[in-house]
Length: 522
Image (cartoon, rainbow, N blue to C red; front, side, top):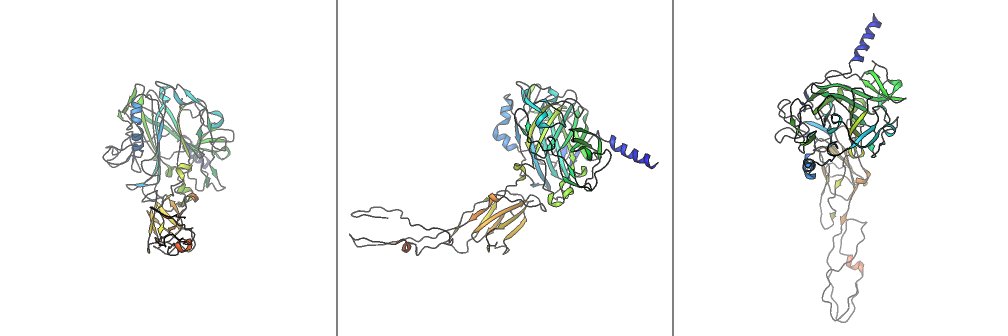
């Protein structure tokens, strides 16, 4: 009887793969297939992809799109692609929620001209660098990606609050079922125009790694795939790139790994994309059953440019990463709460529900938090100028370029003996402390932890040197007519002062005018 119970228990895990989500709100982000904030169904203060102009907030940077004139270009029928970042800085808090990052991408489409970024071959689980071909070409309308987006946030302002990832996608046609994947790469995969490069060291990916107890030691690549149609989103599955020898259906790796392996693994010879069991309640999803407003710059369907998503064109999925067991904070401690390992996101479409069916179209890749652009918090200090040796008791203010009320700022004095007047120490820190006063020359550096408790990031190229300008006193001399007046330079400088002993002082004479009946030699 014991063996039978274990078998049934494992079987229950094995069949719990194809998952249906539900409409709802995750971390104050509405998943109801309406792209704008303040939706009546989700709540008047909820956030979404775009701002409704009244309440809630939009996570996509609409200002850049307006400045670039994307709406006019699309309305004119231009086949363009572009991407946008978050409307506020990465890791900033807004109305009680931490926004990690957002990436929106508008893809080329196959309408008046070919889609410029389509697959010429390949399938999920293969090595992107050797098996995925890329070229301009036609693509079936139902697999032709138009809009795609990814957003990551926490359900509050603390690093212990649940981590959510929200996804959105639209295609050129609503006919039939759509099969799509959002693939998250640890390496910053790049499109070369004919293929891909830099996708990862483990058969073209980066593998998840575990110690002997099952604790995650390295986060690797992952895929979130699903299908959608007029009846909604279905078949949501999550897969991790892992050594095949570690994939044991119906079991958990143990340790900090709280997820359970599903039934299937597909991919290379040594590694593959292994399914995990998606816990109930960890997903939200919906497809628009009626026409709904598209992005502020519009969208495109088989009839051409449109301000709206036609019915059944637009799908949203929200995933609770903490509940799935993928929260870096839960895996590695609070100091890792700011560590999103994913450097790039690639959105793909395929021909059928089979995970290894032929790939058709893609949007991206777009760099994400783990990339050089995403991870490196801007630690630049605005130059306040130098101290003035003519003044006493002067203070200057060092101001960070990156301003976030939820980030922890750590200011460092790198010059021995130089301290901050506020605490008399060579280091001072505080949440939201984006500026600090100094009263002494020296070298200063800023470290920023995007969220309190995270490890502060510094950049050696962002050290700023604050010096002092000399205090020069004017000189006046007179001499007897037709005689030579010699004034040695040290005499000229003797009544000048300079708090910076390293300066080299020079003599200037400005202006010198009306020298007549003689010769002036400087």
